Image (cartoon, rainbow, N blue to C red; front, side, top):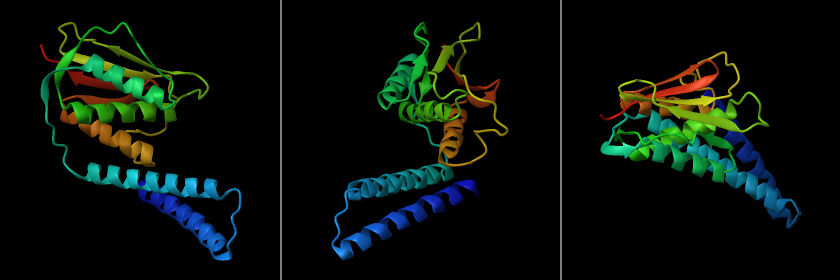
Length: 199
């Protein structure tokens, strides 16, 4: 499995950094790049722990604690604000009207965040801002359609491939969306998510 291979590579990199640090400490050397090496070690450990946590979550059944009347537009605005603060240029269609559904707020927030970060990894042009357009397409207001556009063409389904830590998060996001009665697809260079709304 690709994710296991990626985790082994991360852990091997961490072992290399740790070995360098041990040798420097044993020799009593205090080189100028020591802080950078320690930073890389800590960041690598954080990534490996995050990936392992995601794998554990993926292996468990998705159990939802739905709450009625969750405003999807507010959840999306909060997620976009959060990822923008983290340096990811996501643009949300601000003309979105209030739309509500019965959702597990915490799990849905995680899923939407992973979709945003996954979209940024698959952008067609890394120098341009990513865009998210949110619309309710059904005339009776029974579902919301969320699109992450401006992605490059892919030769695989990013929601089913497990090709690295970003895509296992996309796979988990799809499972959370599906547990809500919705769907997540990659089509026409877009992530397209449908979620049921309350009447």
